[in-house]
Image (cartoon, rainbow, N blue to C red; front, side, top):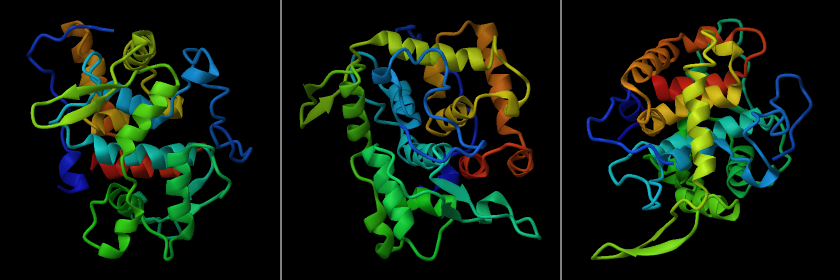
Amino acid sequence: MSLTQRSGGLVQRKTATVQSKGADGGTTDPDVDQYPEEQEEDHDSKETRLTLMEEILLLGLKDREGYTSFWNDCISSGLRGCILIELALRGRLELEKAGMRRRSLLNRKVMLRNANPTGDVLLDEALKHIKETEPVETVQSWVEYLSGETWNPLKLRYQLRNVRERLAKNLVEKGVCSTEKQNFLLFDMTTHPLTDPGIKQKLIKKVQDSVLSRWTNDAHRMDRRLLSLIYLAHASDVLENAFAPLSDDDYEVAMKRVRELLDLDFDTESMKEGTNELMWAVIAAFSK
C-alpha cells in the first residue's frame, strides 16, 4: 500500500463504547527547537521525556493488552515520518533550498545539516543512512526506504527493522510500560502493557487541549512538536485514541479543528517566517 493511499481522509469516531483510561544535540540556530529543555510542563523528569515516535506508539498501544491494533497498517510509515521530523527539530536535517522557481515541498530533497549523533539509536541509524546516501532523496522516498516499502532492491538496506519493538523497549526503560509474553493460539507475542497510565493520560490531555482549550487558530503559534504530533497521529491512525474519551460536543469541535489543520496549504505555511520546512514537507507527504 502506498504512502498516499494510507494517508487520506479524517479519522472517524468509532461507535463502540470506549473507556477513558487511563536528546540532545543540534545547533543553536534560532529555528532549531531546543529539545527538550523548553518543552511542555508535562515533562516531569528526564526519564519521562518522550520522542515523537514514542508518543505516537504510546497513543497506539492498548493500555492493558500492550500492543497496537492488528488492523492498523498506517503506524509503521507514520513512525518513520516522526523520525524525520525529530531529526529536523534537533537540527540534524533540513530541506534543500526552494530555488528561484520555488519548487514544492515534496519535490525538494532532504539534506544533512549536522552529522553529530543524537544519542537515540533509531534516530542515529536513520541519520547514518541519510548521511551516506548519494544522490540525496525526497521526504517521501525516505519514508518508503526507512519502512522497507520500496520496489528498489538496492534501497532495502535502508529499512529500519523492529521499530515498534525497539520503541516499546524505550518506553519500558522510561518506566511507562512493562514487558510480558502473551499466547495467541498459534504464536507467542511480546507485549508491553502500561505500568504508568498517568504519562499516557498527560499525553492524551495535551493533544486534546491543543485543539480545545489551548486552540490558537494559527498553526504557527502552536508548539512545533505538538503540531507534528497531531498531524502524525492522524497519519498513523491513532488520533482517535486521544479523542475517544471526549464528550460528543468536544469531539466535534476537536475534529473540526483537526480538519482545519489538514486543509492548510503546506507549501504556503512553510514559507512563513520561523518555520521548519522539513517538518512541513513530512506533513505534506502524509496529508496529500
